[in-house]
Length: 156
Image 1: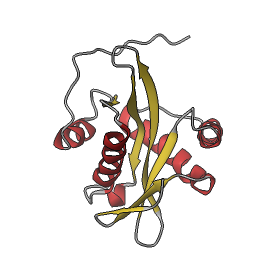
Image 2: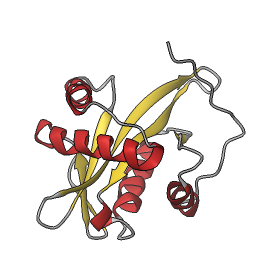
Image 3: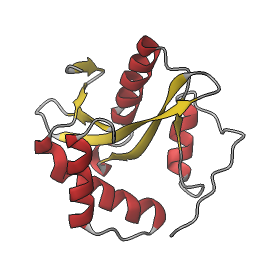
Image 4: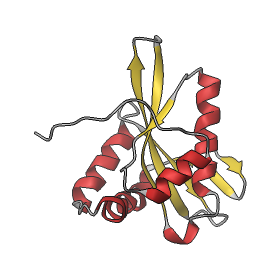
């Protein structure tokens, strides 16, 4: 994965130097979208572990002209035995407030979508809190649609 210019954004794979920004993004996103307070140190450890192991996921970042990390997402994979192919999941989406509505997420999504097409990935998925109206509108505007699947979980 190389640096790719999309609109006014440079999109590339997150590196360890981005870990603190990405961890802050996750803490801010959880509070903003779900009212959930996360432990920054734990999140930072989680981000760093993912960066050390692509099997855990790959962070993609959108950078401004001056190289500032304006937003990020985590790309993970799920094996589909039905299609004998990987599905990709977009997780942990965050764009700094001052960069919202300026195309940062659109650039990230365009990059991921192009990568998925080149890799023969049949489906890109994400989950979003049902009360996150801004996120819902953004994803719909990019051509994503609500799945017929429901999401279940059990905290252990």
